[in-house]
Structures are given as structure tokens and as C-alpha cells.
Length: 154
Image (cartoon, rainbow, N blue to C red; front, side, top):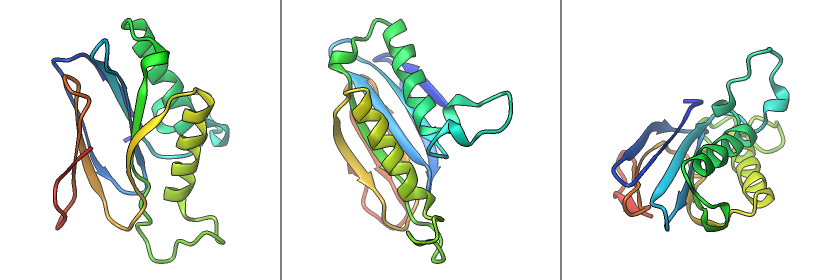
């Protein structure tokens, strides 16, 4: 949680237990490189400490992934994203209370990807259950695993 990783076509990137958190994959299909972030909160602007953990926030995690992928030889023009999670995990969460962190995370991720001009080509978001995702960098496919749900490949 709150971390990101990049790799090449020989790698499998996995994140476990996405509830209200959002998993973001960014993939360059021409270079066969990609990255995965497990973001917990919408924006680093809410951070009060001097040591911001960039992978924790939607805005900074996406920017870090882009930077790392470009350093690996990726071209932002080829990047495509998929997003997962952002569930409403507790019944007391609702839009009026501002406690629906899952929805706020989804909105922040979509806004940052739009700002960076990276299209979202796949998503499984919202609902009320957790997910684990496995991102295969040789194909760009993401396996979504949830308890008592069929496995989905996106």
C-alpha cells in the first residue's frame, strides 16, 4: 500500500487487498514496460509532513510512474492506463459525508490521468469488495482476483 513499482516484459507486478485504494497500471505496449501503483489517498496536498511518500497519493504516484517509465525508455504518447479498486468498503460511507474515500480516489486518478493525457483503456472500479491485481508486463493484461467472484482479465 502506498507504493509503486516499474518493470519490463519479464516482470509480473502484483498488489494485494485493494479496497478503497486504487491500483493504477500504466503500460507502454511498444516497449513492453509498465508500472503499478497502489494509491491510498487522492492528493499529496493533504500531507503535512516533510517526507511525502509519493506512492501514497494519486497525483504524485502517477507522476512518479510516468517519470520512471520514461527513464526506462518509454514514450508517454504510447502509455495506456487501467484502474482498479476504489470500493466503498464500509456501509457508513456516503457521498455527502465526504467519507467515500474510494470514490474520491477514483476521481483523483481519472483527473490526473486526463491531465497527463494517458487514456484509461480498462477499469474495474467501485462496488463494495476488495481486489488483488496481477499485471503481466509481457502482455499488458491485468488479472483481477476477488473473493467469491470470477477471475477477470482486463
